[in-house]
Length: 160
Image (cartoon, rainbow, N blue to C red; front, top):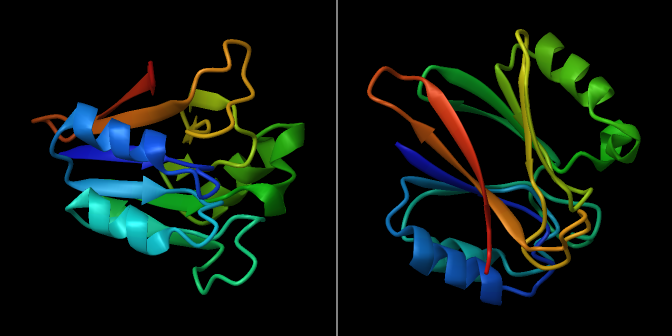
């Protein structure tokens, strides 16, 4: 199973569309907020199920602020992250995800990619496809793959 994880597109969908072309068929797209009214575009372009949550800039959205999904054997909490003071680090969010019984927590908001794998929880942030803030300033996303043994693998990728 192949999952595309994106965040913080901020209504600039060109890179999202490029990424869909580049990665080929995916089984699920997860968008972690700051969609800014592009829900229909994100959904229609994907060609597969899409899970989305609202970010701090999704003012008029009916999307939930967080959700729990089952992906393979994993319980996955998805949220934008701004309600968990994520700019100060992901510890509070990871603790909440553990309390909620999650194996993986996916979040956005910081525009900086993270793959944080520990014994108790996996925390990932794909960064931003539109306004990257990490050192190299490249738009980023994560491909999550569930292998034949049911194990999750994560790969951070950049839009060239």
